[in-house]
Structures are given as structure tokens and as C-alpha cells.
Length: 335
Image (cartoon, rainbow, N blue to C red; front, side):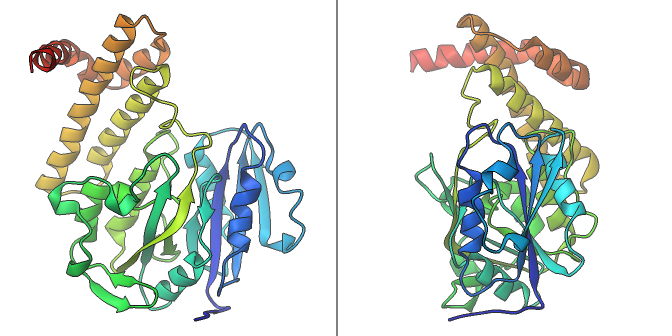
């Protein structure tokens, strides 16, 4: 089944920063390979990338008018996405994000636009990551945040599209990672005013999703795999337990939790969940520091100092959490 609607332009926004060549071209070509829908504009924000977007896309000559490249000094993924949002064409009804190392399946945009044209505010689909066997929809979750298809209304059998039933914001508070960075499209008018927090390096996408889902009403989704997520430059992928970068990751998550608690209205149950996440992250930050010290690994004291200064509770809880780490190690050895 083919679908095309020239009145439903999609702006595909790609923040770009890569050290290895040959990544971005494949990502953009996966947009050009979409079937059943062609009214899109690809906006690439070169965030001071060591491998420039211009050089990466030099071999793409067909449909060149569908690509806009914007260059800026390196400011982080949140800032790059905000720059892309600033350059969304006035005639673009819908917005989709795509990471610069991901590959879209050919049916993604057609299915997303089909859903949004029915009056839904948000469409999201399933995806896989290169280093994880299960798809995003299959990732472990608390019982209240499992996406059980039987609980939702099937609206198109051929496309496997479902209308979400229930409180979607509540669902996302507990399961924001079910929405992948490259399989989410939304009505631009419904997301008006929602921006990325440029001060939170890792976790700014979660804040964005929560802010967006706070103000939208109708949601549709599909369990189909629409994207293969790569690794590229990603703080999470290079932040193994006890590594120097793990502290930067955990510090960002502390900032993220505190921002959510201070800026997004939630009920008591949702607030308790985010506070628990914050407490666990402070504990893990302490555990990672102790592990690095024990293994005589390098510790980024600038990150430690920044975290202690911006979050005094991490300092207050450092000794109790250190004791908890020691007790947990004894328990593991004795079990």
C-alpha cells in the first residue's frame, strides 16, 4: 500500500558530531530510501564535528535540495537539536529526529505520517541497538510500564498501528526509554515551545520527551522495527562501569533528575519514582568513584567538583553511600 500526502511535510532533524567518516551518509540515504512518502526536508546541524557534514554528504547529489546543512561551534546535542528546531520550514507539519549513526527502515515516514494525518499528536515505533539483543519495546521495565498490545486499540492492521490507551505521560515517566531517539515523530503545533535543555549533556532527550508528553493528548505507536541504532559518539556507550566517563554520565543523570523534579509537574507517585532514580544515581556515582580509586583508574576531579558543587546532597550522602557499597560487597561475597 502506497501513501503520499504533499500537505504533510516532515522535517527530519539530525544533530551531527562524529570522529569516524562514513556514518552520516548512510543515515541520510536511509531517509532518501523511504517508500510511500517523499515530502520531507533533512536538516543536519554540524555541531563542530571533526568529520564535517559537508564532506560526509558530498557524494549525495540526487535530491540535494532536500538537505539543509547548518554549521555551529560545538555546543552539545541539546543545542544542536534546538538549532535544528529553529530552522524547521514553516510548511513542515511534523517533526522527526534522527541520530547521525542510525538507519531508518523504508516504511517509517509513511507510517508516521499516516498516523499523524489521522489527528494524533505523537507517533513512536520500535527500534534495535547494535549492542543489545532485545528491541526497545522488549527492554526490562517495571510491571506498570510494559507496553502490552492487548491493552491498546488497533487502528490499522496492515501497518500494525495502535492507539495508546491510558495516561501516556504517566507511562513515559516510568518508561521514557521506550521512545527511541530516531523513531519519534510529532505534530509541530502540538510540540510548540518544547525545547532541549542545553545544560544537561546526557538525559536532555528524556527531559524533552517528558515535556512533550505533558502537553500532547493523542498517541499512536507500532511495534514494528523502524530503525537500527548505531553507536557513533555516545557518552553512554563509552561509559563502562568504573570508567572515567561513567562519572560524567552519572553527573548528567543527577542534573536531569533534579531538573525534572524542579520543572515538570508530576503527581506524588511519579515524583517518588524520579526521587528514587536520583537517590540510586547518587549511590552509583559514589560507587563508581570508589571502584576507580580501588582500581587506581583515573578520576575526572573536575566532574567530581562540579557535581559536589551543584548537588550538595551527593556530598551529604557520600559517606552513607560508601558504607552501603561496602555492605553490599560483603553480602555478595558471602552469598
